[in-house]
Image 1 (tube, rainbow, N blue to C red):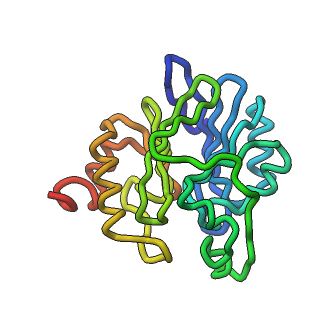
Image 2 (image 1 turned 90 degrees about the vertical axis):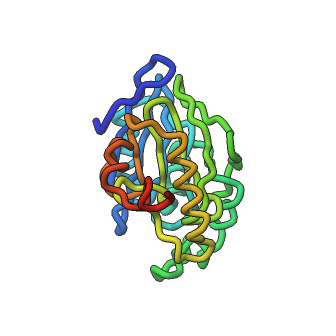
Length: 220
C-alpha cells in the first residue's frame, strides 16, 4: 500500500499506480466498501486488477483535469465498473475534443464518456467515510482541481513536490498557476501528504523546502 490517510477518524487506503506513457500517477482511494479512481491515465486492466484486489465498489472516477494522460482509461474503467465520472465544469469539454485533451498530439483521437457530475469550487466528494473538498486550481488547464481531505490532498498537475504543472498548453496560464499555488499554500499544512499527478508523493513541508515555486522564492 502506498499510504493510509486519516479522515473523520477512519483510515483510508490510498494506492498509487504509475500508468501510461507519460508516467501518470493514478490513485485508488478506498474508504469502507467504496473506492474512487483518480486520474486513470492508461493501463486500464492494471487499474481494474488493483481495484478488484482492494475489494469494494468503485463509486467514482475523478479526473483532476482533462488531458489525455489523466483520462485515457476513463471509458474502460467506467464500462467495467459502472462508476460515475466527475470532472470540473470548466474542463468537461476537454473530454470530447482530441485537440483540447492533447490526444491529437500523440497521434490519437481519444474521447471520454460524458461526465455524470460537474464539479465546482467547494463541492464535497464523499467516498465511504472520506470527504474531499474540491479546490479549483487553474493554470495547467482552466478547470484543474485539487481534492483536499484531512491529512492529504490529490493535487493533479497543479502542484508537484518539487515543481508545478506546465502552463504552455492551450488553456494554460502562468498567472493563474501562480495564484493557484499561492491558494494551496494558504490552506495546506506542513504535514499534509501530497499525491501529485506525476512524480513521488511527499509531505507539503518537504515541498516547501525543495519546490522553488513555493514560499518567498515565488511570491514574496
